[in-house]
Amino acid sequence: MTTTFYDHWRDLPKSAWRWPNFSPAEIACRGTGKLLINELALDRLQALRDRLGKPLIVRSAYRSPEHNRAVGGAPRSKHMDGAAFDIAMSNHDPVAFEAAARAVGYLGFGFYPRSGFIHVDLGPARQWGERFPVRATVFAEDTPPAREVLADSRTMKGGGAAGVATLGAAGVEVAQSVLSETQSAVLPLVPYLDTLRWVFIAVALGGIAVTIYARLDDWKRGQR
Image 1 (cartoon, rainbow, N blue to C red):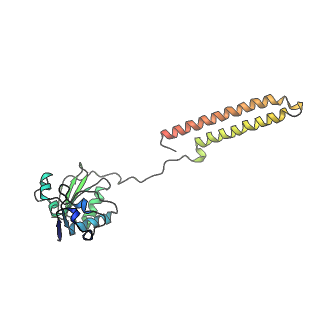
Image 2 (spheres, rainbow, N blue to C red; image 1 turned 90 degrees about the vertical axis):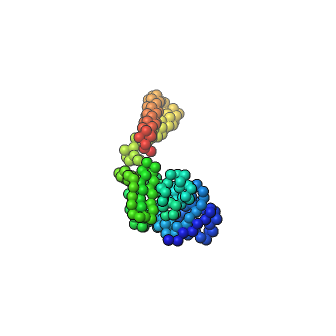
């Protein structure tokens, strides 16, 4: 097991780091900045990242002995060997994570559902803590917002009625103007056309009201 120690992670030459999905800062001791590179443990961490295909949020990796005492770590914690990692489960299904971690060769497992992370280390084989509750679904798939079928859409019906009625009212007004300038025989029709124009206007207002109501109701139900 090859290990290399640095008094601070900033002392590490860039050429000495070969784990692309992790940085020296996140593997270094959180209390002192000291860094112990355990190549086997980091190789398996990278293999786990590749297997899961999504980021691993490292809550704790290497701990210097003084920092391990300060946080109440076990006296012989694998963290002091650079061979243990605490990984947040905020973006992982714990069951799938555990299976993948075992597959890449981790042997020690600690479950901390209240704190939201799983501890993994190189062994010996053991486990402690209560496993995370099984989720009904891992992560919900993104689904597009519910939309009304156009044929049944109250918004389309209301808007359509308003549009047709508006055009009708405008058409009646034009006809009324034309007839008033023609022969006197058709003049008696002008008052009826005026009534028809107001009917169209009323229908248009009703259609607008239906459209507004439908939009508000859909908004309340989370529809578009």
